[in-house]
Amino acid sequence: MTGVTIDDADDLEGLARAGRVVADVRDAVLAEVAPGVTTAELDALAGQLLRGSGARSAPRLAYGFPGNTCISVNDEAAHGIPSPLRRLRSGDLVNVDVSAELGGYWADTGASAPVGTVGPRAVELLEATRAAQREAMAVARAGAPLRHIGRAVQRRARRHGFTVIENLCGHGVGRSIHEEPSVPGVEDRRDRTVLWEGLVLAIEPFLAMGARWAVTDRDGWTLRTDDGGLAAQYEHTVVVTDGEPLVLTAAA
Image (cartoon, rainbow, N blue to C red; front, side):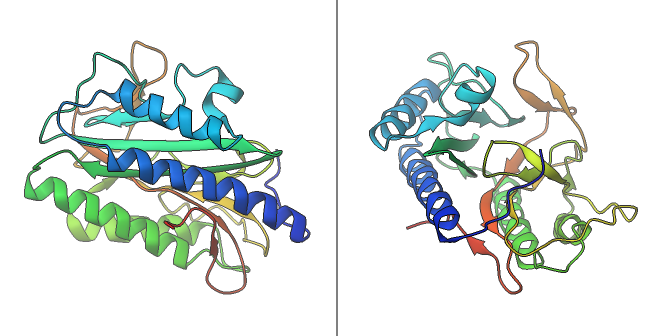
């Protein structure tokens, strides 16, 4: 499906409402991250908040995912299934990915966080990934090549000695959860796609300690780093403009 382009104020208002809901849920869930909490408990909170806002879980609605949100821990780069058996421990890294549909509009966001006390290299991974996401958004301007997003992510990862998970990409979003164009975290010089004003994107770099590939776990959902190392992700839904993008999932 071709990426959504905002055509009028109604589109922007609808997307902004969906973005506000998923951002609020993301931040509420991250605030409860602590040693001893299970990922199922975090997901139950997310489900309660989504329903209270009149929104529907995107992964559940679109794909039949067994959770309201994707909650991934340590080497789980994405699509981790919430479980009452997965109890967070100090030293873990946890990622909370929240996406939802509200009034026909879809928005997507995510963030990684430390559980208790983590090592300095894990802290650096979080900081580098957040910086990569911020710098990727900064180059997402109308008229700019799409590949500049991946270039920004790669440059930040290399500066810290980290890698980009190449088969996990951002994407268009708006009328469904995954739309064109795909937004790689690495630069493909063969890609001639040019960004246009009003395009809605989910920009989400995945950085890792050394892995460049994610593999599907036996559960059929969870994507793990192929070397068992830590991974981190940050994600915002944005609207491309001729200047700084409009971030629909910023913290309140």
